[in-house]
Image 1 (cartoon, rainbow, N blue to C red):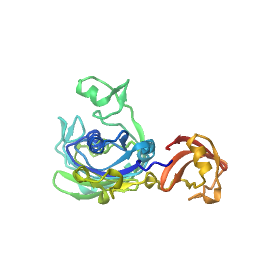
Image 2 (spheres, helix red, strand yellow; image 1 turned 120 degrees about the vertical axis):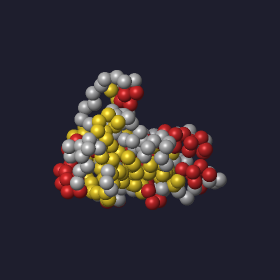
Image 3 (cartoon, rainbow, N blue to C red; image 1 turned 45 degrees about the vertical axis):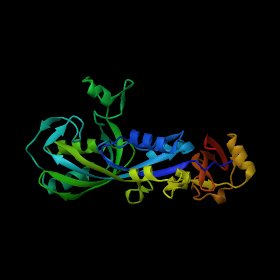
Image 4 (cartoon, rainbow, N blue to C red; image 1 turned 90 degrees about the vertical axis):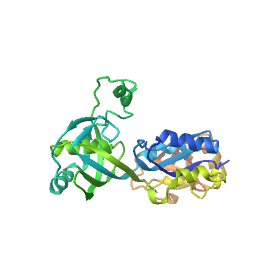
Length: 302
């Protein structure tokens, strides 16, 4: 009953290709019916792109909630209409901030902060994506959103560029951070390079290069870089079920009772409903709410 043709690929997206095209190439190569990715990377950017196969695509929202880490370079004195080096320069400055000024300012930008996404983004405005409106030269407004910045620090500096490390939460735009940092330092700025080095448990140092993946001869599910659907579980309530009756009930979308003592991590408060993942042989078969000892499935993956 538990199908093995579902799981995750940790893919290293190269520069010069969209996240959509990475997914398309993998889908075509392995003749996959259902595939998706977590956390879009711009064509200019490179780095970790989690790819979900089969019913694991239902877990993508949980990947997108994970903390992400980036290394990126800011070029000072120029602002572009896309907030990266692909856009047209729309404002200039002659001021290059000092290391002291940068360090002092980034200390003030941590925690929950308001951030306006770039105009060249997939944010929808009245049903249209912002980048489509930008290309059509339409006037529009993007609202600020609350995002989370866990850590940011300078890695190195040159005359007109500074390299940073950042750890941030869902919906955080590095391009917006560069633009806003430039404004706060009384200059202009944009991203000149961007690399995502971590998404949850997926890291750049063990990611599969796209070209290598497209050249393998074995099936995707025999590939050593293919991971079970449960590998993304990190600090999340999980429960392994082995009773065939329970597995059948879950496959039919029915609620089942769990032995709380067998939870991989027991919640401190059982009076509040918690999201929990059920696994069978390292594959997620369902996630839903746990109320006391009663599991109520939201989504079924078998």
